[in-house]
Length: 116
Length: 116
Image (cartoon, rainbow over all chains, first blue to last red; front, side, top):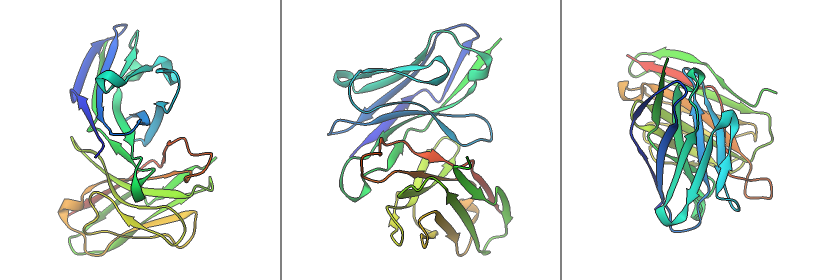
């Protein structure tokens, strides 16, 4: 079965510091991986996704993620945090088997705080 | 561009009451989903549909029913609401298993339900 683990339910960084949000996945087939962002009282918005090809994926708002098959990881980074990055971030893996094909399995989320 | 629209956005129910959440999408997507979001639990799939007239159970289906009578609409029903169903409900849609499907889900802005 596929699963997603996000390490750290809360991460706090200073403005201008590196943002690193960790995601590990479990999948017996090549995964499709996603990062979504949720701002307070809003729905989820796609940040970036990995399907095939280049393992370093660039997304919106300066975020990028690196797919490492050997480590089963898909960590999200941003070189310099901005106050507007404060939000909750969800990693997800797409189910690629059987009748559930197409569903996403989400991690429990990491809430990012940015200190001035 | 409306995308995915959920109604109502807020609702307060008493235990035992029934209600229906409506989700409408205007992107001609084949697949639609209902998730619930609870603090520290991430998003959990309630039910989903891979096409008009079809529905299937997700991870946490008990206490909910769904219907997909029209391709653009996906209804989530609570027949007898319980306090454990207090949550934020998100509808999402995606392309089906044809060329356009890159796995991305498009989310509505959520419906906040409180059961007293």
